[in-house]
Amino acid sequence: MGTLPKRKDIPPWVKVPEDLKDPEVFQVQTRLLEAMFGPGGSRIPYIEQVSKAMLELKVLESSDLTEVVVYGNYLYKLRTKWMLQSMAERHRLRQERGMLKLEEAMNALELGPSMK
Image (cartoon, rainbow, N blue to C red):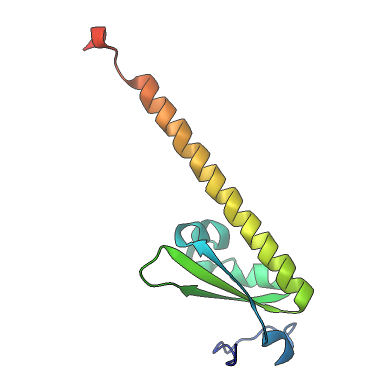
């Protein structure tokens, strides 16, 4: 990746330019990001501070995925990527379980043939 990010507020713990080389990149379903990062990405600065990394989000066109780019020290990048992927999987599983419970509840409320 030859170009540096266009972000103006690079956190003080990110060393320029060495920490901006070779970022960790992965994709997450866009709908999970609000659960992870809060409304409008309000938790991103906190997550960056705790993880000592810098995050960039790039919405992929014609897809429901968003690319998450993690910059920083090698170990911090790997730890942050693992943490965010784990959070996304946890939220996905919780939503899936919630939909299954909703489906079971709706099936339980259906009237039998004699009740119609």
